[in-house]
Amino acid sequence: MLRFIAHRLALAVPTLVLASMIIFALQQLLPGDVATALTGEERDPEVVAFIRQKYHLDEPLPVRYAYWASGVLQGDLGESVRLQKPVSELVLEKLPVTLELACLAMLVALVIGVPMGILSAVKRGTWMDAAANGVALWGLSVPNFWLGILLILLFSVHLGWLPASGYVPPGENLVENLRSMAMPAFVLGNAIAAVMMRHTRAAMLGVLGSDYVRTARAKGVSPLRLVLRHALPNAAIPIITLGALEFGQLLSGAVLTEQVFSVPGFGKLMVDAVFNRDFATVQGVVICTAATYIALNLAADVLSAVVNPKLRRA
Image (cartoon, rainbow, N blue to C red; front, top):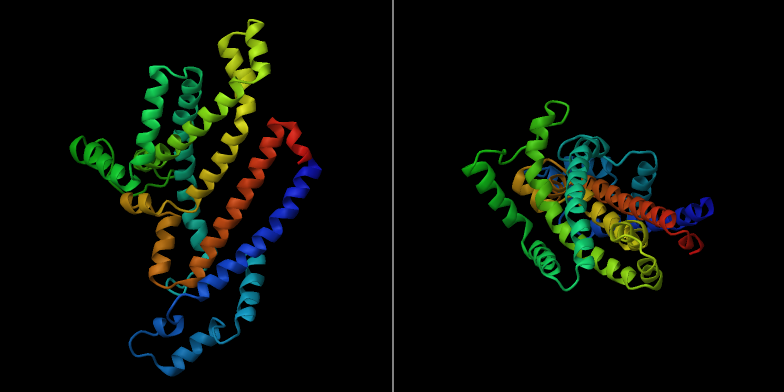
């Protein structure tokens, strides 16, 4: 297992380096000039020159990348030119919010999607299968922002059960925190649950048709034990991979959902940084997102190898 993990880590490091190069290079292709944008309407030449020198904007592109990459290796993601704060500090402020939202959304997706996928596969061709597929199709078709607005109208405006927007840290009031996160977590989890259900159903159908499952069924193994003990572990690998990818996407920032519910997470931070041409913040958030995706894929590979030892030789 250690050799397997070391091999995956050896692949992850150059991937992250290449991702950092692409992130930095694409950022420089955006139109406009940061120095002149920061100086306002007057654009004093001395101030422009000072900003260029301070942020190394007068250096060639490879030199600027070297400055930025060396800082990243030391934990310094740069400084936000708009907020005059370290980007690492901004990331640490927003990361717990997005992490909580992502965890709650994944919990909703797993609780709804996996059982529905198993039930749909076991009851293939019945009304339960048709109902589960209908719910999954609805989850895939409904836009997140539209569902969020409907939930606000129902649970906030008409019923008054949940707050329409805002965020309360769990350290201040856990109950209010869960109330403020309930609707955005359900909106995000609903869409992922639909995808999770379809993948779970497809994986379970493939396993339930295998020879060893038919043999176990012929030996009189109970249906519940057959599904949970024999079929589900072998069908879990694509579910684990999908879960890691979806969780990474949630951590990268659910922009529309965070905007609708005014959740101060990664998505809102990214949108504000792009509109204000805060390149250092954009680069910092994107490189953190890329590192998260790589780490989650590594975790998914390790977990899949634990479930299926044959994958350790891959």
